[in-house]
Length: 300
Image 1 (spheres, rainbow, N blue to C red):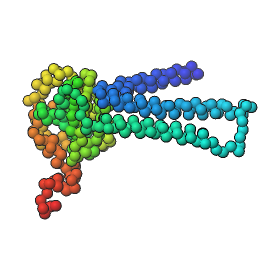
Image 2 (image 1 turned 120 degrees about the horizontal axis):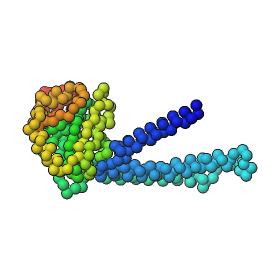
Image 3 (image 1 turned 30 degrees about the horizontal axis):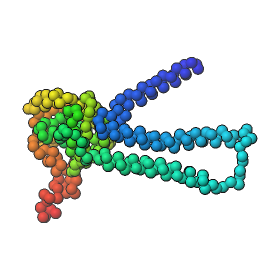
């Protein structure tokens, strides 16, 4: 019986270890771009600073418990001791330094990794407009006049400049291996700049609960060579469906999109028109379906 228990314990340990290693291959601990690498460095630095306090505290706790055990006759019992300025200084200075270090790292890195800040590169960025829907992702390439559902194809080593909004409820765009989660909200845009420096397929997801289909609201980012990207563009252009207002209204209907869909033609200005449409019948501007600069005097 004891042998069976040991085997089960070892099996559970191996399974847990495998799950941890698998997550490291696809998550924030396996970055594939400069933004993700910088965020990993921040994570490691913050962990090291905190461990510099946690490890000594654990060691001192065990040491004190061992030293002041009942059988140790060398331990001094001082029931009247109540204050030591040196000990107080040490006790308070260490957490103060930790807070200063962590605060400094967070402050500096939050400015260096500002999502709106362009990625330094000699290559012109690829422009991508992103719309979060229930429960799917719409990617529009405004300069290429194409679009796709639940799959984003980009060239390796090229900055990607995103404009993001939501056609429904608030959501969150996140590609863990590329970095920088950012929120999407109806009636407004946010911006994000990323770069992938290694070809491959990376998983993207929604990091904000948005209803029944939230768990299936994920997408793939396909990072390909420049020549493969050009070939993909040539293949997509003119093929598939056309993304116009009628097609977009169908996409607004709640539902999970199990397959990748391609739009070989996109109406110009459709992303701007999406920004002006109310989310689920409620305008983000406070009036039913019309932004303030379009309201008549009687309506305003």
